Length: 224
Image (cartoon, rainbow, N blue to C red):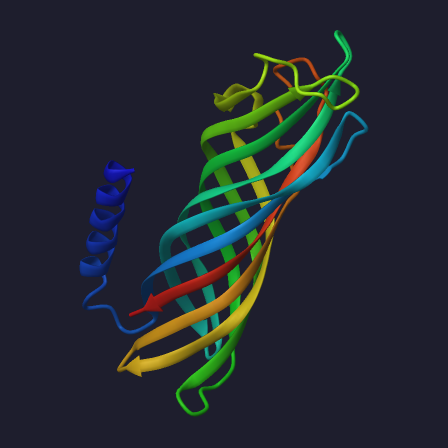
């Protein structure tokens, strides 16, 4: 995590300095985003079983296309997840997983913003996201068909990266407000709904699981 933070700050400073003499059609910022994630089952072999609290942080960059319209991108280090339950046939077991997934996510969105009124403007955002898996862990509980935990079978922080697809694609819908602080600097507050549309599982464990992972996030950031 320390190496990621150092790399992130170095990249931010490099881009900021590169555009320090730009003509004003480029904006750069930082954000943090607590989130709630869940799994949506797409096959009979798996069921959704609850939510997971996650957190993301990243860099925001906006290229102004016209008045009130921008192409918004950047990157996030996103820690998301969800809970699931599935039945293992041989032997018959119920397996409960709380997935803790980490992605490098790149949003590609169109941002539409109102004119400023009393230092505040409102925006809507829509587009696609592309993510690359950096790691995957699971807290796993194994029970019999009567839901009695099987001794010695449950594990925490189980490495399940091989069971998760490397690529995650999603639809991004969001909105919020920007509040001018000083000059071009603005505080950003908003919500994002991130809807995955590719199977999150690689099915390398031969259990044909099909599900997508979604999350909603509260975005808190600053734009310069």
